[in-house]
Amino acid sequence: MDTNSLILAGTSLGVMGLVFGAALAFASKKFAVEVDPRVIAVRDAVPGANCGACGYPGCDGFASAVVRGVAPVNGCPVGGAPVATMVAQIMGLEAGTTVKKVAKVKCEGHDENCGNRFDYDGFDSCVAANMLNGGPKKCLYGCMGLGSCVQICPFDALIINDKGLAEVDPEKCTACNKCVEICPKAVISLVPYEQLTIVACNNKDKGPQVKKNCSVACIACGICERNCPHDAIHVVNNLAEIDYDKCTNCMICVEKCPTKAIQGNLELRTVEVTV
Image (cartoon, rainbow, N blue to C red; front, top):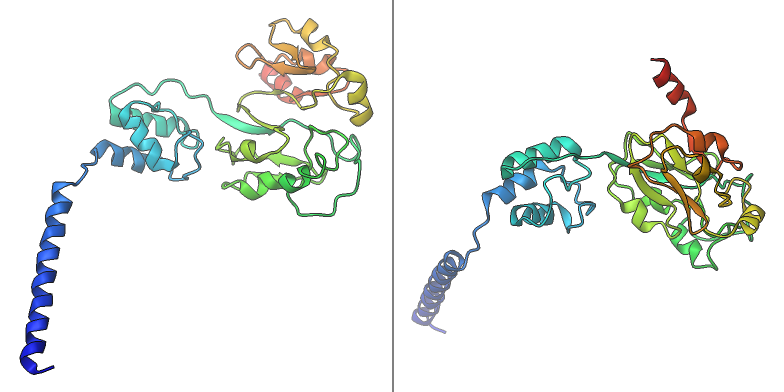
């Protein structure tokens, strides 16, 4: 190929590049989707955990949903009340009441209270163990202590304690819901941060069978239900459940429960009354 041909080829490629570049620039402006500046402002206001606890795919999804009016301004559980206030200001709305919640493991079935049906020698994963006939524990509803929740928590808010059960640090927990979703036994739930009284059991079998499996399980006797002065606790599907909107943390149910399946911070209640 002679010199003139090379020059012509180079010139042609240069012209084509300029034409395509101009076309792309025109298209980017012509078909550009304008982003509402409030979406960017909301996105900058939230913590950026991208945990999905709000019900949307990451913080960008939440910000877009808030601006579209389909997500509440206080819908970020990680950010809590401070973030809700900022987002409300951006949107020109009232933040409303935000109740801080934390995860709670509803089980006290460690080895002394609840034995195993077989020895498990597999992955340190509750999800994997649960595939083997429901896992090794006698109670098929309890915590297996293999740490799937610990592994997935993005805030280092869970540990496996010295009793072999998952335990939540309420000061680190942001109620992102990841541990709740991954637990194959549904033994973790979100409760109000201020809640002192908890049903520490997840077993829904009938009383006689429950006692064979775990010494501290709820036996659905109904004593708590009959003694609660606020109608805040009822036996549903063989398991006591607390209505947190009605519960006043009087802890009468804690004192009356024959198996100690209902737990509460009696010392804190005494301090509050004394003060």
